[in-house]
Length: 271
Ligand SMILES: O=C(O)CCC(=O)C(=O)O
Ligand SMILES: [Fe+2]
Image (cartoon, rainbow, N blue to C red; front, side):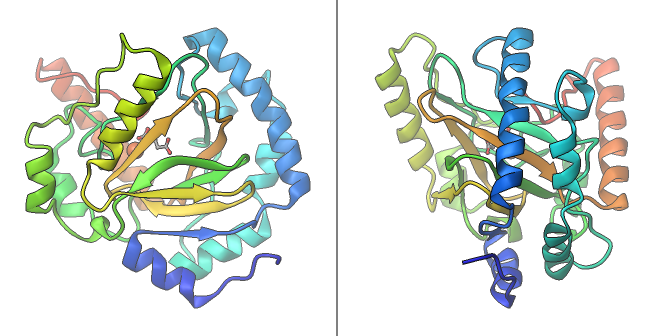
């Protein structure tokens, strides 16, 4: 069935913190994007080794064919679905941010469980995040899969609320640590990551098909869990607003200042 927008997308986005526009990318565009992202995988691994998680932003890499990314960022069906879900001031893509999430070449691994910015941006003003995490125009993120992708897990509905007691009990230490799989052989590392992922109360796997566009709130509890045998090229983007662009710039500047004052390391929430 071709993609059809419905009110269920709006309802799910608000209740669960994510919704999926199934098969919204035409197959011909998926094919073109796969060609560009095959090259992106090589470029990323040459630059940063086989375990690299992403290449971002794609626009910084002139050796890639940029046309498929432009076609994706101008796709009328996507613009329309995002406008219908979020409203008119939202774009479905920002080419200055757009990246690609990739599978590891060598060994399974997973990120720690986290809410973006709060847990993976050292030096962030946490009071500011606490005050802002429910703001509709902030924190809208996108995973758009070019191959079937079950790497992302979420705790549905957690975007609406603070951590629950059982979540704090599971992860009492902050920053939250991921599992240490460095010395493990592959099947053991995969099992250890799986146990870590599923130890979060209410965790659910998000399974995307090729050409699915998932719009989600990155203030949700979520995690990425990766295995080398599952090929991955998932566009990672933002359903951006001017307000969110300003927020990011302001927070990055403040965190960098903190760092310069010796208070910690300011790193963007990317690997
Ligand atoms: O790989 C994913 O889908 C999630 C990655 C993620 O959450 C992150 O890097 O912050
Ligand atoms: Fe994240």
